[in-house]
Image (cartoon, rainbow, N blue to C red; front, side, top):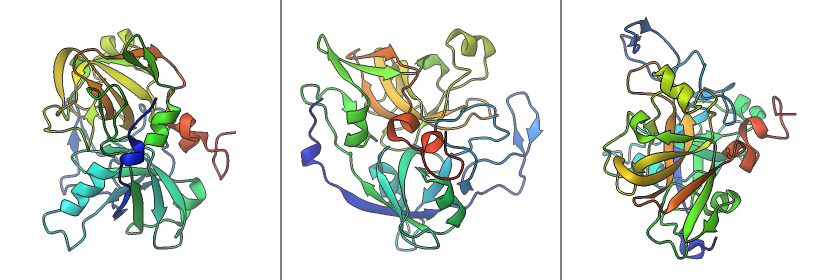
Length: 302
């Protein structure tokens, strides 16, 4: 599809590999009332990658690959980290600027709200050289992206090159997107009500077993391109009958009530102009050849 990508601005945003954090209490109370201590957000996650299952890890909100944040002293109001999170787009190139892995390149795979991290996939040998505190620069490109002839469809958080590989089609005046799952808005939890959807994510609640079975969500993967039915993310995240939102699954499932695998929005329309087709291969790991679908490097998919 034709876009306005030739008019978009590409610029650098930067952050550092973020350390995992935990409260002094350490325990989290699960939806069943059980206190648990689990690994979660931040750091360098060596064995969880886009393309792998989003559920079943002994973890809570685990982020695949590398978690990046900007807490520069020059940004006392944290505006630099806001720029990193808002302007970075799924599919953007990221480069290591310091440390033993300097010069290595990776790909932005999503954004995680609340903790305000940008998530980046690198090959396994690069992960082994990275250290917490290493600087990562992202070539931010995609903010303001529009589909020619469909200006009423909000597109966000999406690199134009990735959009071009998603096999999106025009069908009878509508835009058809291949997705692995269609999720009812009623199953969406943490993240609803934000004033915009240009950063962060919101969570698919998977704590009701009957709904998980009904909608076939037990096999959801990190990196899956999914649709949320009756969800309008044009200006923030809300329920609207007839709307459709498309997003990418960016972090794992969770033990907390109201939480689950997170979805970063890439496309939304409030009145049904986005339609879907089932495509079990609609995953950014496969489309971009990253994560579990990398062809080279230790631990790559054969």
